Image (cartoon, rainbow over all chains, first blue to last red; front, side, top):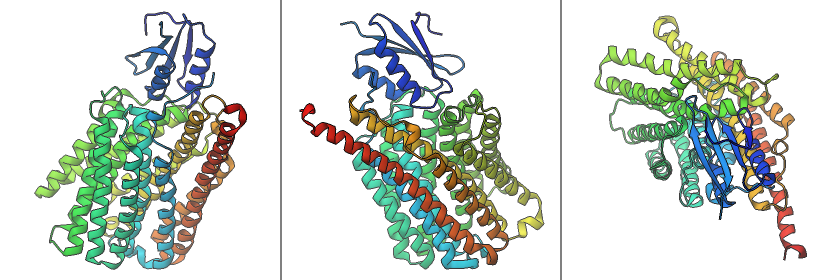
Length: 78
Length: 435
């Protein structure tokens, strides 16, 4: 588990695409710039990475021992 | 907030769609071939019509969909982008479509020039794709089993097609290579080292994701794709070296590896959180049960001389594996991939001004269910045709045409949703407010 605390967690395991993607982008849209979001998935979300980069977000991915992907997302500070 | 995906991560929609829309046409041609050739097709696996039918399904249906799907899966599941995707799709699709048609014509007429044309076009098509996909995957870290599976599956595909081409050249020009032995090796590579490895890689992500099952066990992710390639390679070596005892034992290993995938998947499906099976789950279940039955039949034929002497058992094996196994699972995957593609592209094209339609509304579930039943009906009639061809071959041919015309109709309805939504986006672009 990522050590950095997240303000919101989306557990996308068990959700069909594109639901985790849509939930993540919707949540980011209403979060404060300083807040962080943690997305948990069973696969690596390559299309999401690109969308995050395009829209000014940073992310950090960790793979747990169980093979779960944990992606911490926050807005880039300029 | 309207989510935007990047276009450079996804090839243009026409790149994979052309493969998906062509595949049902080949399966319909397979139905037509059954009607044209009649019961004689089922006399043996070696009849020209049986060989043509097999390749209408493997090259015309399976190869088309798998290459189209890989164009989409590589960027989405592995972060690997094929460069110049539209050009690659155009060359590969044209080459394997024409190559597939020529190959079928070659089996039916045994004309050397047709084998030559088919060999050339299929080599160009498949090797272009393998090279483009290998280049895209080069340098991509193996962070998940799907990436390893796709890489090894590409090797399996390359070897399958190379052996197939050698066989076709030999058939056309009588090179004197051991055709029956090479045909079995071609089958082993095609069904297990390519088909199973690729399906295992995709299933590793797709089954838990779409069917709400637990994940595949970690040993499966680590070892399945590698095991398929190693055991098939060892068996091929023993078979070609003439080490009969080793080849016999290793061939059992090949079948057991394939059975492991089917059993593991069925076990996961048993633990699905879904209260009711949907069409995609049913198609996967029938596919896995068919694959297991095919494996069981193959093992039984090794120990039962009575079964081994029956000319029909290889045909029954092929019907279980091709129509019950691969075709079922591919139809199921198409019903997930195509709506996602439509949603993905409309989401991008809408640029936040027009929401993409709900993904569940892209394809009508009732039509999916009806097509699935038509497919199961065709599969059942094909099984009966093996035992009683004089009674069932014509209904089976007709049912195969109906099931695949229905599949084409369903896929075209998704394209219609895409076009009508695209027209709305274009109208929005042209409106005074947009300028």
